[in-house]
Image 1: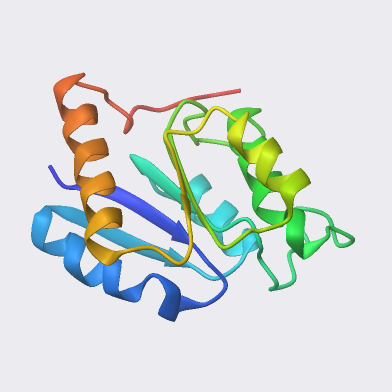
Image 2: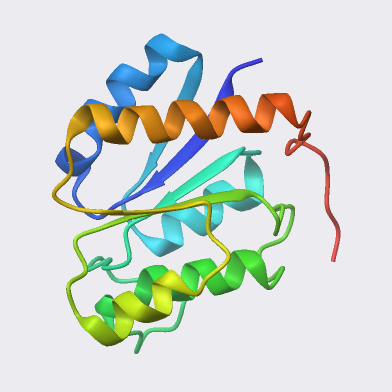
Amino acid sequence: MATRILFVEDEINAVSAYMRELKNYDFDCVYAGSGDEAIAKLESEKFDILSIDIMLFNKSDRMGADIDPIQAGLRLYEMVRGGEIKNCNPAMAIVVLSAMTEPKIEESIRHLQIDEFLQKPLDFEYVMQKFLKLQERLMKNGQDTHREFSF
């Protein structure tokens, strides 16, 4: 069974090369361009890994109309981990892939329960290795992230 990964990024060009290459390694890659789109996909589909960009500049009503784009990815993280998204596994693997350079927010990211914090710009091979190692760990642990959750 393919490892399913949802990339949440407001600029598809930032992740399209990863998505293309990961498909060669038994990943099923899905893209969401906003927080609202990510929430809808997380409610209706099962994913093993969530890759979030912290800065999401596309409008997102379900995350709060007044959400600061610099904090939108953090809000999505909180919603997943807090069990606020129906049918979404709050313990799923999460990777933060971001160009965030604001020290206060970067520091808060480092204290989250995430599997990887990858700060852009990054070496392509380095990012690929991180996703492949995460896939290997999930398979080794026999983690069933496709099970149903109800809150």
